[in-house]
Image 1 (cartoon, protein in one colour):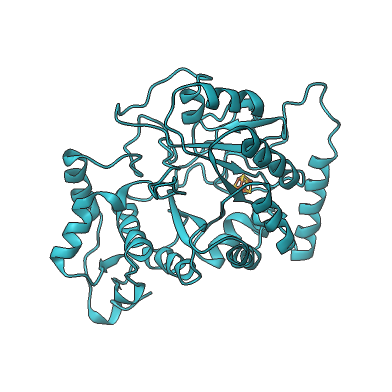
Image 2 (cartoon, rainbow, N blue to C red; image 1 turned 45 degrees about the horizontal axis):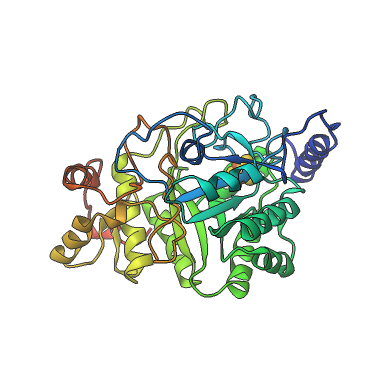
Length: 383
Ligand code: SF4
């Protein structure tokens, strides 16, 4: 078994090896190029395709810095991870293609084509060039487009507060930090030394805290992925921890990517995801704290502590089940990620539009579908 020190050396050596590869003749890489989400590529005419539901409109453009060697981190669930045995061109991220496009061409298309996009999110791979490159990309969007701009920060690249100020000064009005795993143990297991990755739990939360001192209240978010092995109680405790710092959570549902370490790991049951969505909504949007929630011995939500009629009205609004993401000028979610949790053929976990009556009927059935029930009081405390 490797010691922590030995593993760290391997991480450094691998990272060095990746960074020192000779330049290719033609490098389609940032800052001139980015990878864009399939939904963005379809909306701007790079890819053919239609949204499975005709009422879908893309409101946010998601782009990522791009390098032929992909990411130097190795998160167990991620299609961009260093050791995934596919090239960037063959690869997927959150199970859909992310085509490589030229930033200026992307902006030209966003400026001239009809679309409903209000915001662009500039994400970073964990590559030492990602921070300066994403600053250039953010500046380019600020200078040449009217889209609001979010920075999706890879916290490992941030060493001091001035780098967050640089992201703000380049033109981002909001930032998100993808913490992804809800507990320290799971974070380490999926993103840290055990998978030969560079990320550290404490550092990620330190960056979140620093970001709240650089960006105005309500403009910092975190990402959490449901289904990495956490209980609902643990997931919602992380949502509450962020809320207590003035930070909103944007939820994703785990979906296994072929070729990653978690390729055989199952998706979380729909009921688990729905209960987490509802809990997140109550905490972030209704100021209803976790102290009111009750959980069973499996850490599943037993009740949210709201009067039944009130809870019914919240569920019937459909809003808890819509994509949580950075807003547009009017405060509605701009980053609505139509394929954010998988391919168009799969059932919607995050609704990129307000669910209709038939959707709501299904959601109500899903909400308690895989639930183990309340158990004795001894086990019904917060996990
Ligand atoms: S740092 Fe982000 S892009 Fe890189 S492997 Fe981890 S989750 Fe994927």
